[in-house]
Image (cartoon, rainbow, N blue to C red; front, top):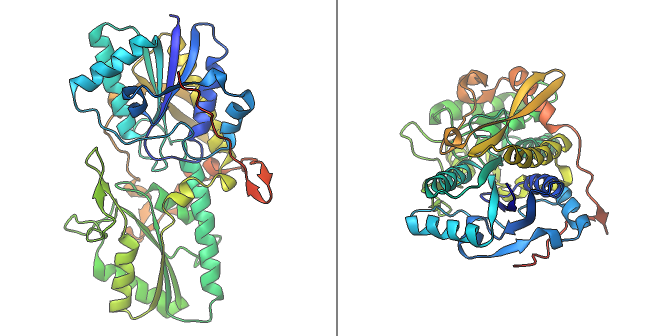
Amino acid sequence: MKGNCLIAQSGGPTAVINASACGAIQEAQKHQEITGIYGSENGILGILNERIFDLNKEDPKTIEGLRYTPSSAFGTCRHKLTSDEEYDRILSVFRKYDIRYFFYIGGNDSQDTANKIYQKAESAGYEMRVVGIPKTVDNDLWGTDHCPGYGSVIKYTAAMVREVGLDSEASYSSDQVNIIETMGRNAGWIAAGTALARQMPGQAPDIILLPEVPFIKEKFLNKVRDILDSRKKCVIVVSEGVKDTSGAYLGEGSDDVGTDSFGHKQLGGAASALKELVEQEIRAKTRQCRPSIINRNGMHFASEQDSAEAYEQGKFAVTTALNSTSGVMVSIERLSSVPYEYRLRTIPLGDVANTERTFPLEWISDGGMDVKLELFSEYALPLIRGEVQVPIQDGLPVPVRLQRFFI
């Protein structure tokens, strides 16, 4: 089937989402069946608003530079398609520009959108191939061993926690508590990743709080007191999505809590809530840190393995579509952890859409306040190996920028 392809990005940016786009573009350029390669500005909104640009007009060096450029070079969005008119509009744009291959790079909600577009095209009799390319630092997509972006975010965050621990150890003050808040609405994969910071027992982080286990105030306070009694310092990592036993988020009362177009709460404030609790109940000197979007885009310390896998998944999406497969998402099947081996396969978009893969309960320890490092490290260490070689100018990383030649 000959025709143009369209690539779009959606959801939260990562350090390696552009590597997936690069893989898809460079693979598409090898096949004569794909007559044109377009990008959509700001995800699905770019299709609705007809903001489509020609990727073949970009300098090949710029396309290659996407492999070391963080964030979403195409622009992203969080837009929920809610009406038949919007789907009809999308199909009319596809027809107008002869889009026969559509690749959507994103997380849970993006895969749901891709699945619905696939279904609408099928029911309308419009022949095209739709393939989802996974992306999410939260690592919560069902049906894949891990997600592009996860290895890089835990590499960066674990390094940061290790450095916070060293800072805490060096301080002359006693009864000092440092609280670091990570992303993770319903899954604690990122917070758990900070366990890799420990070089030996007794080093930071001392407590890891995950959304999978309800927060119990007295249990937490007693743990903090025990750590301060023995070591005089305590480093706590808390996922933004931690809830108490009533189901309320720790940061529920924060002004930062809002709701996106998919109805998901936009969280923040868990660290603030814990800081207030520790100061009131224990009277310890307490600091909080909320890296938020800083560490998810940390390309200067991104995982080479993560970037390489993201690139390969972009390429695989194109060859999958050219093999007459549609309505699927690329996924990783782990074959071995030691040595690390994997293969790429596909799973139906309908199986992925609106599902979440939480952190395994059997990997959680210490009454819900820590991670079994021996189990988790076997899973996670292969994902953080190596560093992306980022060009440096005047001491700072140099990303590329697409010129976006709109058609």
